[in-house]
Image (cartoon, rainbow, N blue to C red; front, side, top):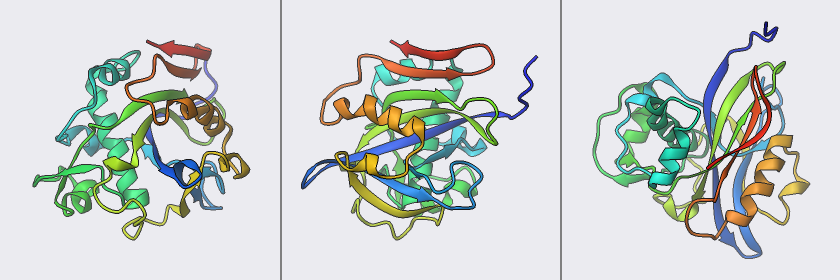
Length: 224
């Protein structure tokens, strides 16, 4: 019997990147000191999937390899929610829009401010690169999918965080050469090691690492 009763929630995390003056940069922010999950840590924008995310009509889908891998060891019906949830979290936590100019009706209040920008959510540039389950014993547990996205996919100025909520402080583009000098969660360091070689490379990764910390299996497998 599993003694850990913490509910496992689906989540999406987005690694936005661009070429900076000293090489590739990634967008990160710092969680608050009072946060229940990873307080004070610098993280990528992301969070749990909401009920309305599965009702969102995506203007564009990612490549077929991305879709197929997202559906491995998961419900295929959950895939659209994982994609739209990633886009919503970027909007809420950074104020950046991953979308295409197009009118549409938001399925609920979580999406009304995004729809008001005049963009429909687009997953065309999302590349599924990592998956990890939070170990047992944590106050919150997530089955998180990580997506790599170029800053060129942002509709508007990628330095304009004026519409961001206050969940992440000190939002900034951090050079990859400097990022390990920040206070990072261990899993973020693991993800960065896997993702760094993929940046600036076209096409999906050869495999997607899946860090298992669920009730039955612990370890790393590869989604092919």
